[in-house]
Amino acid sequence: MAKTPKAAPKERKPALTQDPHAVREPRANNLEMAIGHEVRTYRKKLGITVADLAASTGMSVGMLSKIENGNISPSLTTLQALSKALGMPITAFFKGFEEPKSASFVKAGEGVNLERRGTRAGHHYSLLGHIENNSSGVVVEPYIITLNAESDVFPTFQHEGMEFLYMLEGEVVYRHGDSLYRMRMGDSLFFDADAPHGPEELVTLPARYLSIISYPQRR
Image 1 (cartoon, rainbow, N blue to C red):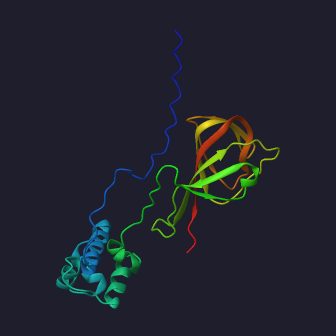
Image 2: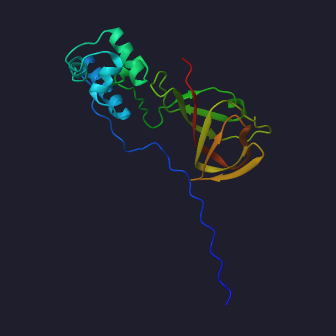
Image 3: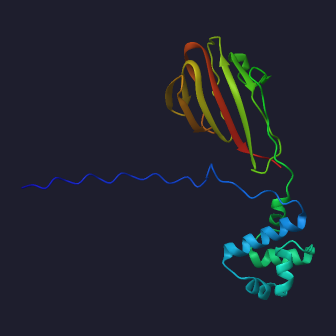
């Protein structure tokens, strides 16, 4: 009797490393406590004791305990020695003492209307929020794009970063590189924006979609 062939194992997708439900400890209310917390955290990540760190830095165990507990303010020379021993940049010691993070809130219909490349082709951009300086190193620009007039020519956009589209209304055929995607309400498209992209055909107007563009922050 012939054996039934086993089904090929399904390819497992790689797990995402970012935890959307992760929380951090409250921000330290003074610089000494912030530095001490980071020293202790990095030391424990390396799996070494206070005595081990003391031996590698030439400091006393008592001194390191005071630093980790936020009881003293270490000098720059001390921070440099700890940075070298723990394999971390000096700036990382101050991570827990950063200024409060920014947020941008825009009420319905109050987005900033902008003229960008493409507005002459019947594209209307409404910027939903913008944060210039942030700790992530990434700039994110969320737009509502409205297409309400047909045009003979639709420009093919190409820029750095990544882009995410989410269709809210209408129907368009969207090009990315050599591929075409028919997008209706609820459809989404996520792509490398360095490839030529843009609306290829307007099927049902008006058409509206959310466009989120992200690219490296220039400092």
